[in-house]
Structure formats: C-alpha cells, structure tokens
Length: 112
Image (cartoon, rainbow, N blue to C red):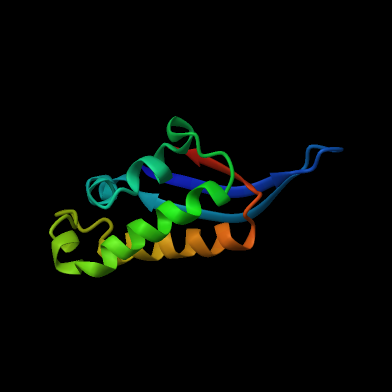
C-alpha cells in the first residue's frame, strides 16, 4: 500500500485536470514522516486544511530540514522489511517541494 500525492489544476471551462506532479511513496514510512512532521501534511492534507501547493511549502521546508539535520535519528525508522527508507522520504519531500514552488496555486490531492 502506498500514498499517491498529486499537484494538479483543473480547467474552469472543461474540467480537464492537468497533473503537474505525482509522487508515490510507501505507507511503511509513515512513522518516520510523523517524527519529522510530514505525515499529516502529505498523507492527510485535507485534515490540516491544505488545499493548494503554496500551503505546503513552508511545512515541507521545515520537515526537510528536520530530516537533513539528523539523518541517523530518522534512519532508525527505516522499515525492517526494506520497503522504503530515509532517502525515499527525503527525495519525495524535496520533489514535492519543487513542484509546489513551481505551481503554488495548484490543488493538492492525496490518495491513500
């Protein structure tokens, strides 16, 4: 099982959805994501009132800094089964941040 996160816009006239970014990450990293305050904003954005990419930027920057500041601490949360690891979560967050900065007005949609 995994999370699919989308940064997308919908055309007002024809309702066509343009996908700007799509990321997929294993649920095995939810404990690590919780520890660095990325879980709720990425896995459950609607619960914390994140609607557009701009709403994610500052919180992603903080979470990424947390991960980078203490990799050894976060690597402790690498799943024993080998499905996902610290680098996967860090790369996912960095890629998502880049998409959010490029498309700040785009909608955020999480599919769990």
